[in-house]
Image (cartoon, rainbow, N blue to C red; front, top):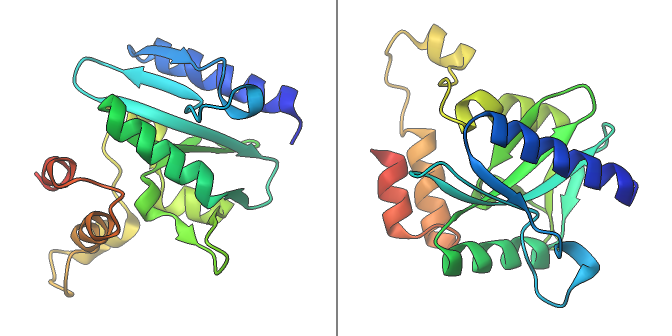
Length: 174
């Protein structure tokens, strides 16, 4: 993807978050423009604060280096924000992931496929608090207990990996 297209997608995300009532800014020194590793977007609504690394693609899987994700987590922890990866594929909406929910490749990088983003990502309305995502599996479940709650397991795994602190995990599990 061209740098111009990436910049355009970041501005698009900033404008959408602004319209959703967030105070938001695009970090002009993100990426290769500085020695400091900064997220692409900072956003907050008075209750939730996010450091977002934004990535987009025409349809191919999106890859992030381990260093990009580690830098995002480091910045977010020091800043007091929640680290999120914002993913947008052409002709799709934005989807958001906690770094601990991403697929880690054998080489230590991170990957998000289009179908994974749509099926498992937090969509824009849910991310901004406008709706809550319900999956077909949850609708068809009828309340049957099929084992451990996958969300709880993901959160516990993120805490174990050190990409989510205990306080954030407790809030997620409330």
